[in-house]
Image (cartoon, rainbow, N blue to C red; front, side, top):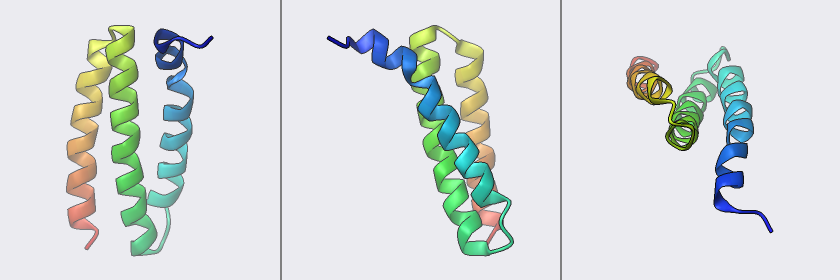
Length: 79
């Protein structure tokens, strides 16, 4: 049986994959794809924040909050 701590511990891997996918979209030359990338980055910020809380990685949580603000700013500037 898979327990919640195990699931949370493994969350770093989907968070990493979502971050890579977001980077791919943000690097696109098309505005629509960049917008998608910013939203996917926000999802990765949430995933990393959840994993950081589980791992007691408080600097990572603060980093993700700062990066989320930058992603929101980037999304606004992309229009």
